[in-house]
Length: 537
Image 1: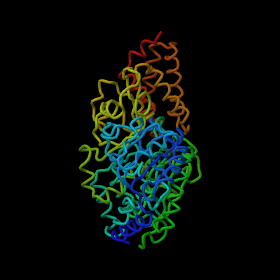
Image 2: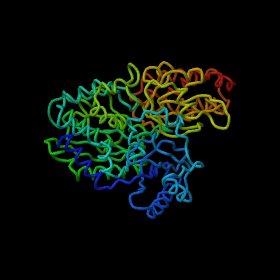
Image 3: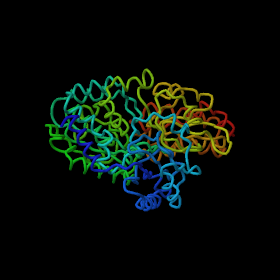
Image 4: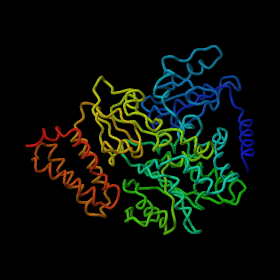
């Protein structure tokens, strides 16, 4: 199969689907489902059944992003992007007749439900990873192909050598979106250079940061995109087996992944002789039990192998000695989702987006005390102030902004005086925090930063696997000191001991969990030290 054959297949699917004049898309991601999207979908489907043939079609789609306004419904031409759609918020089943009436020629939109078309939340985004989210039916293989899906994989298999693929990824400047920011092309090249033999590709979907839901939303909304990225990676490095390691707390994502894998196999886009070539690649799902430490790649592999999820010292790195001792490539969900458009459009296209050292876009999950809670995708280098106050809509109830936590338990808190910093891998590090996988928790003036640090330290303490003493004992001791300070029972000596412990745990822990656990404490001490000192006896 080549690209012309794929386009013929897409045209055939379009003809068979009898595309309507208008699509009515109902967000059926987890957040909107929890707000009552199911009855909305049923009501709209029933109402649409009474319209003239070909006038409209109702379908469930993935996340549209504005989770705080769900259930969301979009009315648009088939395959039209979200910025060309009329989007309705807080929709109920009772609104179905009004929405259906609005699609008749000459009728006006339902203004009481309508989101302004120029709302910064949508207008300021640059959707690459999320370009199909809220547009395609996640369970439809045909729907994915009809919007250009699998074009990157078919191009790689029919027109490129494995080294050509690696060269494009290297040219793109893509860095790992799981938090480490390691150059993706360099990682792929290292695995590809290992001697021929069994190799593995792993997708790390063990998203455990409090307030983070980027990977979950992508898997729920566009699972074929991730499978396509994994297949391209497998072709590039010479692997024939892949695993998606996803936490069991994401049942909707797991179900949609299973459906996508089954349909891709049935149509010859996974399995043996993919797209009528000599390339073989199969993918299985492995469920994680919810241990935060299994986001660390060596602990993740131990879990897949059936062992306890504990990290091991590195080197050797997974690229040399990974799953069952074989060379293994591990990237996260967002990294793989970037691969198909890079191969389709070229590495130079992707490298033209973002900053000098942080290319492309980044998906963030906005949570906490912010008006627009949800999922966004913006160019690397976008300022924190723009994300929070323009795209996010600012702080509700007229309260003042205090800080934003980036990078989850591994990151730190950024105060208002640093909001004009660009969001990229290197800039955030200068503030004592990190981008991480993309979670952002916004806090208003009512937040106490000692309590914030204690919360994250309790999380790290509970999630420590216990293998190394600095993390196992150090997080407990730091939490105990934070608890004393929060209860105004600590002395200045306790505060000095806390700072000393932070340095020791950071420098001596075995894996990233312990090495970054002190970050929330250190960043709050750096910018809000007076809140600690006010509580000292």
